[in-house]
Image 1: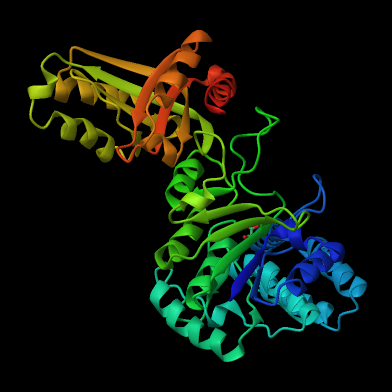
Image 2 (image 1 turned 135 degrees about the vertical axis):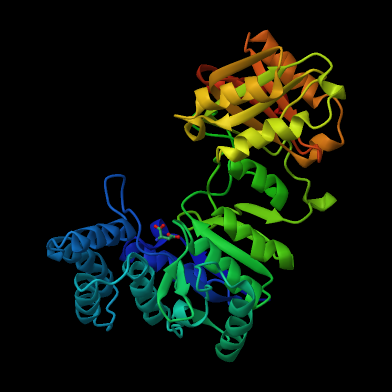
Length: 439
Ligand code: ASP
């Protein structure tokens, strides 16, 4: 049995958190490979080391003094080193990084040093080998992850050592320069490590006990989801239920390795298991759905034209207008004589008049309607596909509360229903739906 344990920034924010991490690693000898983030916030008003590093880069590019911010960074690592009695020469390492940043090092190099330094300290503290991610995570010259090269080289290195600490968030390009993933990207490194060593489990340790069924600010009694499929997760993450980086799912999904979201501050909690398929014995969640997530900031353009269903090519022409204007569409609910494109409101800013005019000219619809300030909410659950009546319950409940439904879209896999409501109704709609499907 081999497990990968990835620890997020808040799990490694100070020496006390490092101690919890050590206890977790020591509690299970199958936790062989550890992937750390950079130190995160110790409390609400604190700053993440990665943010401080981005500040250093901005100052250096404006040819301003970086000393004060580097001193803060030094303070963070030095207090960890001192409290844990480690020998790593933090001062020398930070001095070297500062010199490079002051002399024009790239933004990616600068940002990656948070994970790099934390990895060195954690490796010493755990008594494990440190493997620099630049030697095992590869990007192409265009900055796209080279998943196959990464997998081959990493697998060899990991097998050689049998256990190690590999810092998250970055790798290297063919010319050796450092390239980072997007923010939160240590999750991806963890996933790549899990795939390379063909792990039995990828544990992702953070500061919550898993994915909540819905936003606890709206439904305080909501609980963590015990089992969720990769597909359901994708639907919920799309709506902003963010615990895990979106791109972290693919590498492990491909190899069928489950991800377990765990809480460093409550290691006794079992967290959420993200799996390919939920076996009957794991059908432990009692709700009819898996999760509800919502997001504001959408709008919709609806066209109506009689006999639209027999007009060949109208859908393509409608979408082409968005494509030409570089606007992604989110959903496309349609009726017999209507078609609606749900869009991100920001994406259409400054282009609306032009797009509406093009629709008039090219499609000659009977009417065009623009609806601003929408929220979308996704009700997600694999059990919905098999049980009749869930949609009925949802819409009845919304109707009773006089929440006007602007759009409805059910994915063909039937694991989600996406509902558009006015932004001001989002929170109420989530609460109402939760109550309607809670058992
Ligand atoms: N430290 C990076 C960030 O703050 C990457 C990560 O934490 O995964 O985004």
